[in-house]
Image (cartoon, rainbow, N blue to C red):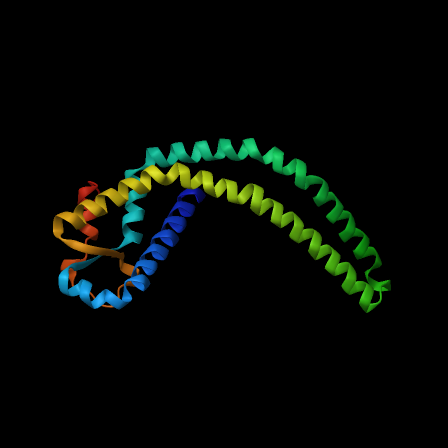
Length: 191
């Protein structure tokens, strides 16, 4: 499994877990009423996502290629901004290492604070202008795949009369007839 697939699994798991927990927390006061008037189903999203990687292998590969091209396109822009900052940081660290033994405790702390501030400034730019943009592009590319999965789960839930479907990882207790995992896999023609 390549890094992109692992990232996809991790990302979708976090999103689904967050949404599931959000739904659970926002419906807690009426949760008992939901169970009286409707059914709550669960899906083992970990299992489904593993199978989804095979089902959508072509789409994932295209998304990975597109994402890599996007990364190569924006990397020089970010490097142009961060490069001089990294050189400055490197020089500051080299100077600090040469002077370390002769510095007082206060001067030592001052230099380490300066180094940390420079590292934080670089990290901030990388996170804001690179990681965030790459994550947004990744979400955009994976949206059709996630929409397909959502559509399958919604379709099954509606056909079967489920009013709420959660990731199985948030389940404390449940009966097998409320587990929709295999129905989802069958609907996707995945074994």
